[in-house]
Image (cartoon, rainbow over all chains, first blue to last red; front, side, top):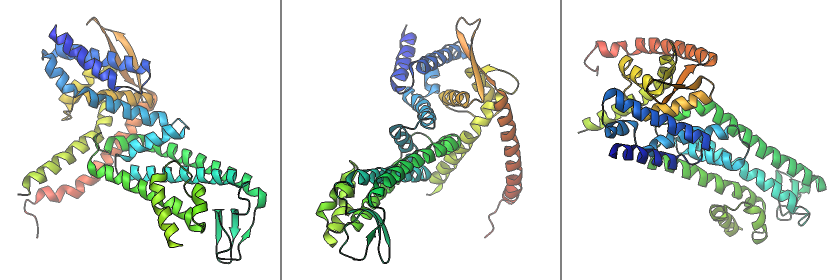
Length: 254
Length: 125
């Protein structure tokens, strides 16, 4: 009686923690673990308590299933949301994962920014384009006049070029992530060392992401000297809280 | 003073090592024929020193199956409830073969490297 209760309690906790898996997968896992508990208790004569303890806490068991599922799903998907979630999960597993996560954020961020400038081109025709100066080239939002001598090279062609380039960047980023997820599927999970997220790992994730997010807008803010008017292009993603910091410092410098 | 810390690190390293070998061990335990989860666990316990939280094996089995290295089927047993049996697919057999070869090459060359460590008890200064 109490044994049955313990088992159903364990299985219920497992079911709850298996959230993102499909219903069929969840039922199959529960059936298999249920069979294990029964067999194990009958064969070895151990108490149900011991059998459950040897299985490990249901949350941890579920987390191991979920990790495999998330990364498997992401290596087939093209949705940035799914891919970002998977890379974030990977990023908690060590430095290399954090690096991939960082590149992925940069790729999506720059791609989205390029597409945004294409849409802004009709409103700011003289300020957006591919500019050639005496010393450098600049792509994106640009306010000529301060350095002098820049020519805009593309004209209205900028719109299709930026759209294609931005989309390509998004696509290439997705491909790169999927490729990485597929090749790392094996060793990253196994040698990455457990599910727990240590404080050190967390720092390894958060710091590069912040650096990545702040570097990207610096590039844009840098090229756009009159500071107040550039804000839409300088922080084209909703993550403007981190992006605002370098942007302001660029604003102060001019 | 530093001793407990040292042993702790050593244990962690050993745990990682076992974890890394676990996938190959699971595949190898199916070399002779199909088996269900608990059988694999018992086999690993008796044949190797891979004592582990029994739960860790099931997510790995599930992943190996989705990678196409294992196949699975539910079989009605005398026990009164069905059990999920796993078997190696041709891909799984080939992969296991490659893993075993890589493992032997690796451990052989590493064995030569670490042989002097165990021969001499004192650390040379």
